[in-house]
Image 1: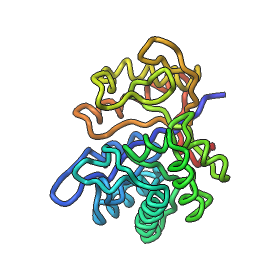
Image 2: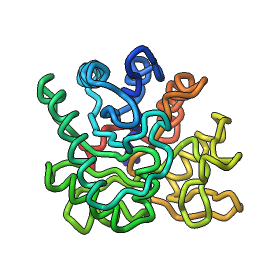
Image 3: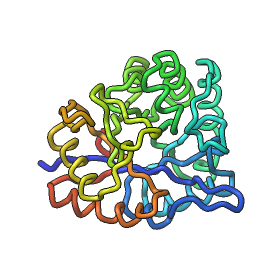
Length: 256
């Protein structure tokens, strides 16, 4: 029996006169899309257009709530309370949900963005607040979180379906956390190396950390980033590379 994995990408991050990524082309290669909701990136028009494109491609639609930090692209940590985390997640789910409903679609998942995602991976209080926000708005939504993180644990405790996420183009620390983007070795730019990392995570349940040790990891969904110089080329290579390894790509709701 073939292994199955979801392939997701952050989308809808253009706003106003500024264009980010190549969403239309990348949507042809992935199974799930995480759509920005106007806090760290995106705007109402971009949200509507991205939702419509995702539905046309039969790609699962996810809310991508971030910190209210447009100039920092949501990647700078902020000292928010658990209640503030709850509120901003509820707010952004509501915003994207309205566009999905208006276009005749259905939400599939929620995946926090950037600093909020990384903070919730380690901070149990923030993780619980985010999981509670998702559950109270719609308990049928799937919560994406870093594999082995507090966010995944919080989602499981409250009764949500959770998807353990791994990253194709990021390096890992020995504790299973992602290497900080402030570090020079945080990103994997070699496509062959990134693909080998994906295959190992899916088939062996392991990832090689920066110190050379293998760390156990669960891979339900793989994140690729769509805003790099060679992002589209990489996105187009992944499906055939995984197929050759006997790995099928399907949207998370179809097999979780």
